[in-house]
Length: 121
Image 1 (cartoon, rainbow, N blue to C red):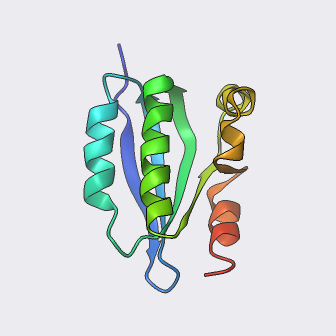
Image 2 (cartoon, helix red, strand yellow):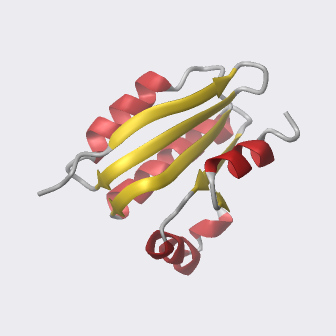
């Protein structure tokens, strides 16, 4: 049975436009629609920079990766940047093998990711 993915807003900084969201659970075709709705209701127009802390993500299939790409597009359209933090070794390997590591900045933890994407803000 799938453990639904849970979204938590860790921080939002109006000065830099950065929002840090943490995901926990299993992200797959069953839970992706709810996560998308949760993210859409959490992200505000002023959030131009997004960090997704994936350290609590136990599983992610291609549906979840596609969802990351949807939000990447949204953030880039706002003139911002997106970073992924805390990827498991398996997920990080998938990102490198598919070339998605070129589309996303990858960091060991959310604090390093937030600092990096807001350095020029």
